[in-house]
Amino acid sequence: MGGGTEMKRFAVLLCAQDSDYVKRKYGGYFGVFVKMLGEEGEAWDMFHVASGKFPDDNEIGLYDGFVITGSCNDAHGNDVWICKLMELLKKLDSMEKKVLGICFGHQVLARSLGGKIGRSAAGWDIGVTDIHLSPSSTKLFSSLKIPEILPIIECHRDEIRELPPKAEVIARSTKTGIEMFKYGDHMMGIQGHPEYNDDILLHLIDRLQQRNYIAESYADELKANMGAVDPGGEAWKKLCISFLKGRL
Image (tube, rainbow, N blue to C red; front, side, top):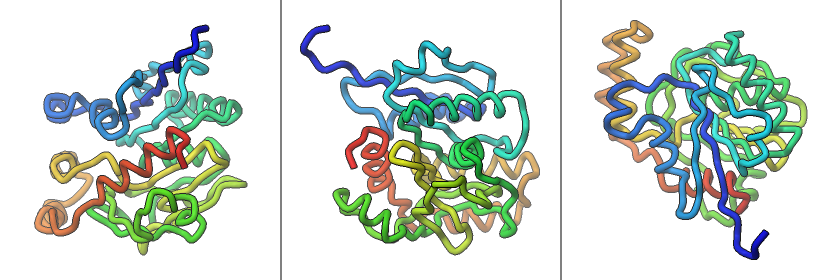
């Protein structure tokens, strides 16, 4: 081995089916995540786990960190790929690999570690929500100088009902009790979507309405409220990068 610094490698575990719009405008959700988290001198790969494409056991060790994306599937479901993903996440835990779970990823990560997931009694949470960081997380993120209350774009109707043993809630909101959790120093989940912008959310609202997940009147109400609050993109970018790359 030479004396140079080795290139850092990261993998996105894609749990969604990219729409034509997101593919065309952003290079798919992989492109959205790399734009938020990628830095010069890194290698980023994608495994479309929702289509059954997983890293081989001999590949896992090559990566410094993994990101689990959102999905239209239920994290409490037992689809073959979801069960296989949970086995992979248990393996990554045993290796103490850095793992960041987003929305569905947050939920399936908690489930793989022994937590319980289900439908939220409060129903859909779509739009910008203020989340409150816990005192311990304020300390954890102190070097980042971010506020204790952070807005984030949400789009979910499931939630973590019970955390895995040894996991810690590090953020909550009025609608969701577990907005963020950490497990050891190597795994973290975020219920909201730090990678989204208003354009992606508007597109998702249209897709949810077209598929009859939400009513037209609710979709119109959500669109009318768009842009009223800044979703805190830069603070979230700093937080996610710092966690994933061990800079906290």
